[in-house]
Amino acid sequence: MAIMRCIAILPVFCITPMTTNKKEKTPLKFRADGKFKIVIFSDVQDKFPVHQRVISIMEQALEREKPDFVVFLGDQTEMNTKDPQVDFRRTIRQILEPVVRTSVPYAFVFGNHDDQCYYIGTRADKKRLLSVYQSIGDCRTYDANPNLTGAGTCKLPIYASDGSGIVFLLWMVDSNTYQNPITEQGGYDNPHADQLAWMKANNDAGVNSLVFQHIPMPEIYNLLLEDENGTKIYGGKKYAKALNINSLGSLGEFPCPCNAENDMGEFATLKEMGNVLGVFTGHDHLNDFIGTYDGIDMLSVPGMTYFNYGDEAVRGYGVIELRENNLSNYDYHSVKFSMLDTEVEAFNKTLYDGV
Image (tube, rainbow, N blue to C red):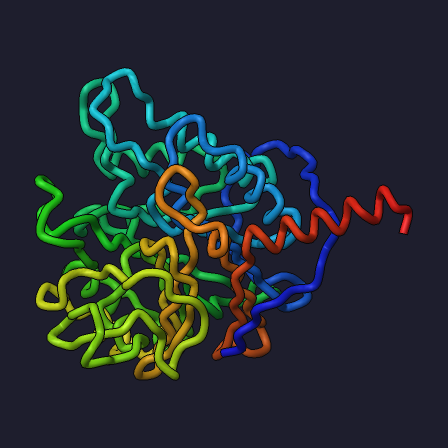
């Protein structure tokens, strides 16, 4: 896998409104030039009205990257309220509006905060939330098996540029919320055994894939530096707040997967499937790193939120670039908000200085 941390400046910062495509969804496929680009927005985590800077950055990202697909990586909303007058749909619509306006197909996964909202006095369960997303724009997330734990766990195929067949897979996985979702106590949750069994049963052997979920796997701690003087104990080991030699990027906080003893064995499942190249997670707003453990990449995408905790030095979005002529590999880089600010400033300077 190639890791890129810088990008050429593209001095265009406006979006032309487009109508939403209401036709039957067309299959995802590689472009004629053999490329497929995905933009990842993680942890928008806001209420209505959503912070204008987040919306502006999303607009800039879509114009700058011109993606073929967008993934929202969970905790789209911060709706922890029982106020019956609050309508969570307004928040979701505002967050999705830049993507809908540009007619880009998108998918999403749920985070641990997305269903912490009430509508007309009733808690908005994930099935109801899923139907709201599916009514807005070109949403590709669906319940592949409604009987599975959570909602929205599904497989999205990407076809060859000539449409001849499926050549790559994207897995959207609900990593659930808390060990006790009623009291929201007991630590964070992870994909359950029934979800993992479904993935194994529906895997296309020999077709490489990427996984998207909100909460990271316990194995992410294998990317951190073990230190007997470390301040974090996880799985019976001590860790310093630092990445080890198998990782690259920035670690602003200790990752928050499920408790090690509650692990349902997701990593082992993905390893057994044999075609998962990487797992993209959000949840930890201050982290922006990538590393490989036992043949599978784990990538922590930085958070976008201004409503919840964050750091302007880290806030950003992720970009994945797939190439049809090399499907055993992919490129990934993150783009910081500060980088976009610098580009806008440079572009404006050329306008005013006539350079």
